[in-house]
Image (tube, rainbow, N blue to C red):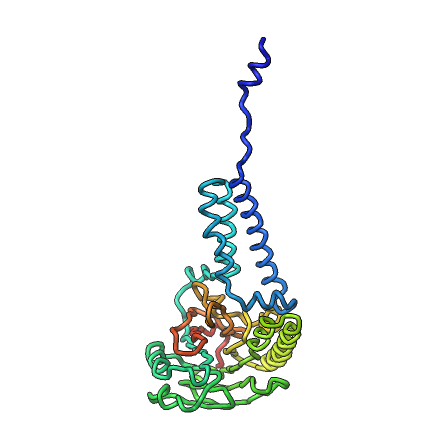
Length: 345
């Protein structure tokens, strides 16, 4: 037997060439980076300042490498497409915040009247008042909670009859219900951003509403961008302020005895450890019934969801959506709630 010819004729495994190795190396490095970013956002936002920077940054950038990696895999390493698809799903879903409220697909029709709430940071002079007036006509909310309000827009926005209105500091509440009382709370050192708690009288309930605006991180993020060695201290101080405000606001909310809705500009996403610690007992309307990404703040290349409508026990959110551009950097959040708790006899 000719062993030499037998060995020469046996098949050999071809080694991957340079582009195959490079595609594989880049794909696995990208996958590790995406998983790391997701874990940082999930576990360390408002805990460790680099993760807090990621929380406020644009999310779509995490998908950009796939523009190159997917064609490369199609050409040289097709078996890596599964890894890249998993990364894409992680980016589009948990990182970018895609929400699909599948429970609502099987929900029955509401058995009781619903309350429609609209919340918006008007950004003071940047608001397109006629556009907001048109939105109110189209959506017909029962409660409108506004932050950073300027009274010069009042006659334009609330031109129709039937509104009961009240301004307290930067806050403005307009409602189809009767306002029984309003109480403004200031929480130093950020006294310009307060909480206002209202008691409304509906046909069936006495409804409590908290309108809030927590401290903005804009200045501290700019400080990190231009001088991170010193700027991170400002960002950590901002996180501490939002924590202090959230503790005071959630304590205030726990004092409410009855149906409660909380609306406003929280200036943090639901990944924030501060948000989770103090506001997670109150279900988020978007998480319950919103479809899509639900971004409420847009600035240059950034789009995130920092405006929320929360509900206390006894409410079920039937629908939630984000409204159109009204001139402000924030978009309006609109939600329909059904009261499923006990009704007074």
